[in-house]
Length: 192
Image (cartoon, rainbow, N blue to C red; front, side, top):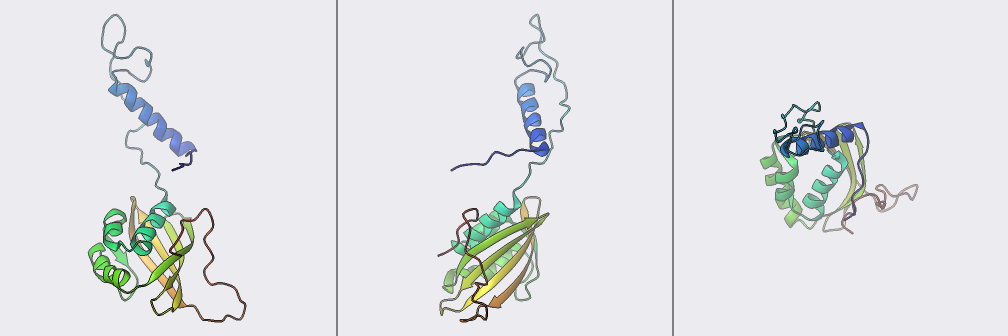
């Protein structure tokens, strides 16, 4: 698996904090890295507090988090497992047919996704701030297709809120354009 390098000021702070933690754990103060465990003349180095806070939050790739959730829950039909990993227990739901809460979401959507024969394909994922939108296509067992826009709010590394808009895809369109785009190479593949 190829990982992209993370850059920017936030990552520099995280890396600096990690380096200070390693030095302190190894018995060095951040200013005396060359003398592991010693301040000189056989004396242990004084452990000083790092100038970088050790509670610096690690940035969360919200688009990846939601894409991973959606792929596991809907494409691979593991609503319970995906929800346990990615959804907050007190999850707020705005779809009028699904109650609030992670357990209620699993109880409602799990059997539907697992047993109905519905398939999902992700077309695109867009993230801005704490909101991630998945533009997807669902196809029922009888062939009826829908364009779906799922809006997820992410907080503290978990999905905490959801809204959706679902529209039936007609057999013919006046313009001939698809309602859900084909996934690009930068998007997670959906169900074929």
